[in-house]
Length: 314
Ligand SMILES: *[C@@H]1O[C@H](CO)[C@@H](O)[C@H](O)[C@H]1NC(C)=O
Ligand SMILES: *[C@@H]1O[C@H](CO)[C@@H](O)[C@H](O)[C@H]1NC(C)=O
Image (tube, rainbow, N blue to C red; front, side, top):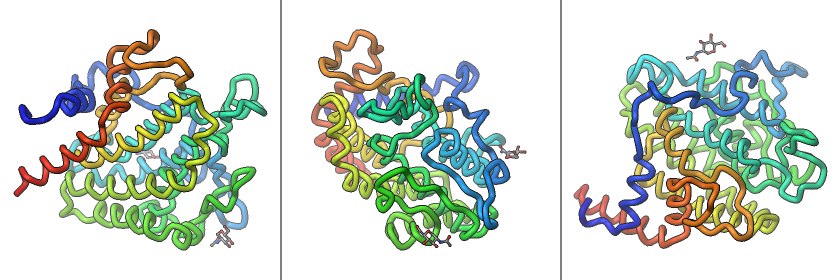
């Protein structure tokens, strides 16, 4: 630890912050968790298929709720409740996006995602929403495909967004053919999940490999969306992708409480022009520090960290 450069130390401190214990976590669940669909029968059925609209917050969140529920049994051997399910990281991150206004129309046109308009609407113009599609629809459909959801592959169909339909796959077969590499990484994760000999660390490794693959694809497809944002927010989005690679490399355990704790360091609202960490007055010290670290030489520390891991594991 003493050999690591200062930024790495800050990051490690930030992200491995506080396993303060489950007891003082008030409500770690994402917004509207209770009112989101929790089983397939909560969705509409047409021609024998469940129809899910991933452009409505509680319907997209419902896919996560089913996913976390259906995978709970694979984690029971670790702790007797579902808190240790490493799939919690995905719905919690989506909840943060919703709470901070990041799923709303960045151009503020028709009220998609705004209190005054349609608050549950997820905008297809939102960079965060589009990135998240690859971390919700794909893991969900891959789970269906790998058999952990208990329905067959042709039994579920997602509704397309109002525009740019060709950028999004809507069912198992079209996702497999459009994004074979990423779907295969998610499938690999579910295969290992179902294999009782997989360790917790193995599962984190396969989960993060799939996560990074989703982000790599999506960040190339949706790069242009970042133009809709203030410079600090667009920079944060780009830096965030790098930070995720760091979290992946360190096999950050995306359990319920660990994710909830680290999210306290994320910006509690969208960044606007003039926001400059560590001097953002309505942000906590933790939030300012994380933002500052993300904006400075993280790539270098990431490389350093990976080398460090490689050399110590020899
Ligand atoms: C999964 O969902 C079912 C049906 O809603 C519920 O009865 C069950 O307790 C849930 N399991 C877990 C681990 O949350
Ligand atoms: C999957 O969606 C595509 C369009 O995206 C459609 O052409 C195809 O029929 C659908 N397949 C199934 C099995 O529903």
